[in-house]
Image 1 (cartoon, one colour):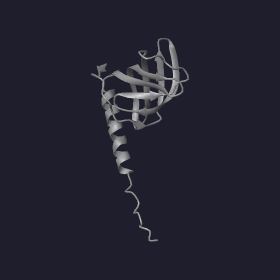
Image 2: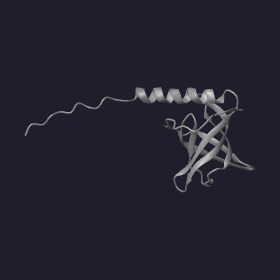
Image 3: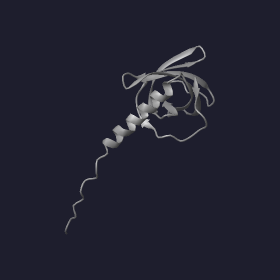
Image 4: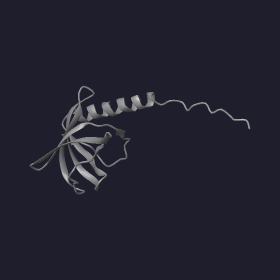
Length: 123
């Protein structure tokens, strides 16, 4: 697995991707709240403590093939969710995630609409 070096603040995109999550022998199925090239925000029924090591398989073919990654819980707040930093990937999976995030960025930029013309009102 390749490893991501050092924490950084990455641009996040709202995306609901199915996730299969493993913590030791326990398995959970849930969806992402948002995604970046370095992590995921999840809203699991169980709130995992900061520092918990997780194995995640996530994606939405054909846009994003199923990716396999290791992660660590960086923040956890009941009712809000957990933030998972992705720390390592199966070979080729990080590049696939980068392409997905780039495509989401381009899609978001294409949807930006110029503000409506503001008409002045005369009293």
